[in-house]
Structure formats: structure tokens, C-alpha cells
Image (cartoon, rainbow, N blue to C red; front, top):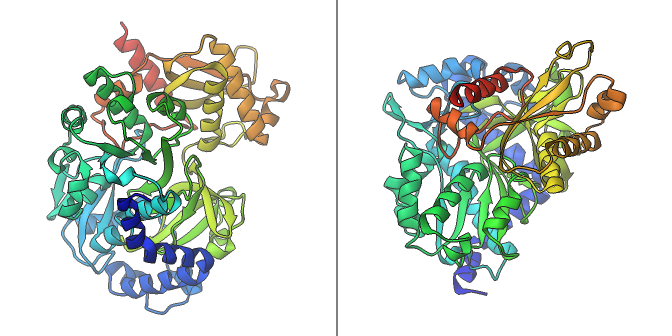
Length: 508
């Protein structure tokens, strides 16, 4: 065992025991989290308005506090932005996380408290290191530098509170000693201009032994391509020969894995999934090459789950002990970031209850159900992955929306239009469309039923746009950076039509 890994395993041994404890005592741990949170909530304006008191039973809590989405919660954020104290949490709010979400919606301002960043956002990366070194005792991943492509915490200041990406807030609160083990330097990492940031990373990171990197797959691919162009190298091992680990999250890795494996052509390169959002850090894979993650139960966060097939009835909401394996749920959190019964909009499906493990499946508002087909992001990403594997294509970005009934002359059928940009286009785009169709039919019985004999849905339409189109549209909107995400699915055609209009306008 390398000395650095041995020392890390010794240091992390108590934390590994804590993780094993909450895996075997999940309900006990969640009960303690709940008690701690309502005790703090009693001291807030939100708690006063909703009758939150220390020791109140969960049954009473769910009666008094309604489930909140961002528009419901926004009035409390406005109070924070106006300078009022102890609105949603008794402790200090150190940042307003400007949640990028997808390009389809306006920004949200999520409170990040001193307690929340220590309990969740900063604890998650430490647990990633603890779990990984425990899993791979011969690893040398942390013997060199870690590269993080994140956002900025420099987009504004309200009531003395910095506004920006959560990764910027994390950077601001990273202990000084930890910066010696990471690149780029803090002043580069917090740059708001993405292109300048990547250029500076190219200049600085070449000088270091980078062995681990982390971030959103799509933006990291852009960075890696620029590094290869900058250095003239053929693959990333020629740049960083000791590279071992990519810690990824934010979007699915399925559609990008083949491209990363081409850039890192070695079976020794590993990929570890995490679930980290502006609202908190929630999941870590306990092994590489899987999207199944362990739900982190002791991050001062109390979880509730709302079945997505009953979002019209709050009586179906259950705490952790009520979830069923295989069912799709919207996540509701109460946490030390001052979020109370807050529905993030993310959905997950549990794969195990002993311990509680899950897969991220998408967003409550990002799905397509124009014809009763109920296609979620997980279905779409699996379909794109399958189509790429079947045709040798390499995806850059994609989005999908329905073509509504009546669009085809003499027919009442509809279809799905996939707008795709490729790094490497397939030789036969119809074969790509067939593979998408076959994967969706295999994964989703509702879709298969609507496609049977072209009953309600025709074969998917694949519209190819030039490489770089999605990024160019983001640039036009002033939304470029390591935490910006493309809206993969929509029940409306607004984003698809805007993309097509953008292509027509810029290609004149």
C-alpha cells in the first residue's frame, strides 16, 4: 500500500465506520437528523411562521410545513437578500448559490449556510476520498494534484452575501492547506470567464502531476480537448501519465464514457459517480463504473420522497423507511442550508434498501409525456448511449421534444424530435434513429405501447446540428461554465425551435 494511501486510510478509518453505521442503522440516523433540524428551525422566521418546534413529531411537521418548490420559497430568499437575519436558518448564510439548473429557466438563489457547507458540500468530497482509498488500497490517485473545473462565486453580492456557483463557495471555504494539493490556483478557479479559465488551466496544469479531476462530463471534455490542442499530445496520459480517477456528476456519464476512454486509453483509469447539487451533496458510488450511489444519510439532511406517479397527492409522500425499490421518486429535503420540505425537482429510483442505494433518473419537469409515453432523462440517456454504441457515433450534446399530432399531413400520429450535435457523426443517421427507438422500446413499456404498429408515435426524427451549436447558443445567452446544463427533455418545443432558429440564423 502506498504511504499516502495508508495515511489517508488511517485518517479516514473513523469516517468509514460512521458510513457503515448509517448503512446498517438508516432510520435511526435519519430520525436524529430530523430532530436536530427542527430544533434549529424553531429559531428561524420560517419556523415561527410554520409552527416548527423542537421535538415535534414528524406527523405534525408534515401537517404544518407544506412541500415547497422554489416559487413558494422565493419570498424567504428575498428576505435573506434584503439583509434579514435568521430567516431560514439560525446560523450564518455565507453564500447564495446561483443554481444554474438548465438553460430553460431563470436562476434560483439557494442559501448556503456555514453549517450546510460543512455538513454537506465539503463533507461529500472528503467522503469520496475516504470511500475511494478504502475501495482501492493500492491507489496513488491522491499522491499528486487534483484538478477541479467548477464555477465562480463572484457573480454579485447581496446584503454582504456573495452570489455565484456552489463550487465557488466551496473554493472560498476550502482550508488553505488543501489548496496545495489542487490545481488550478484559487484565483484561476474562481474566474468568471470560462474561456480564460480553461486557457489559464492549460498553462498552469501542465506543470503539475495531476492524478484526479472532477466536474461535469460535458464541460470537462471541452477542457480536455483544449488541453490536447494546446499541448499537441495524442491522449491525456501523454499530458498526465499518472492520471487515475475522474469524479463526475451533474449530468449522466453514459453518453460520454466512450469519449473519455479514448482520451484515457487504459483499463487503469477509473470513473466514480457522485450526486452533488447546489442544494447539497447527496450520493456517492461505492464502486467505480456504476451510476448506483449510496444515499448519504448523516449530512444534516432529512429526506422525504414523493412518487412521481402521484405528484398530485401529497398524502403519498414518505420518509426513507417508506420507499420501495424500483419506484421513481421526487426528492424532498430539509437541511442545514435552511431548506424546509424543499422539492428540488430531481428524481431518483432506489435500487436497494439494504443499504439505501439509488440511481439519478432525471427531473420532475424535464420529461416527455405528450402521448402517454412517460420518457424520463434516464431513458433518453440510455437510448443515446445505445445508439452511439451501435453506430460508432460520439455525442456532443442533445435535446428532445415532441412533434405533436397533426404535424404530419393526413396522420394523427406524433413523434419525438431529437436535436443532436456529434463529435463523431454516425455513417447512417437512420440507423442511429433506429437504435434510439429500439432502446426506448426495451426500457420503457409505455413508449413501446405507443410505438406498436405506429399506434400514436412514429419513428424518432433525428435532426443533426453542427458541432458546437449548443455551446454557441449558451454563449449567446451569456451562460458558459462548468455547472451549466442542457435541458435534455421538454414537453414543449420552445428550446428545440430556438436551437433550430439559431442554426438557421448563424449559417446564413
